[in-house]
Image (tube, helix red, strand yellow):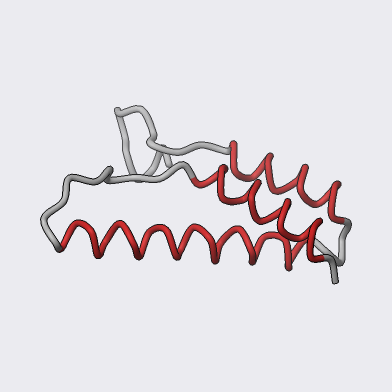
Length: 82
């Protein structure tokens, strides 16, 4: 982030990496890819919806909190399981 945005505060940090480590501790080594996939897929669906809403002329945020969807993906993994 520091290389991409020199002299500015980086718009992202290591929070998602730390969160993924905690999700791995929760879901286990074999469950981590599936839990992260669920979170990434949920974030993708929401991002797609925001893109569609923006093209329709609605005022929508330009960013989403990615950690929220990683947590939702972990919860979805716990509910659905393997």
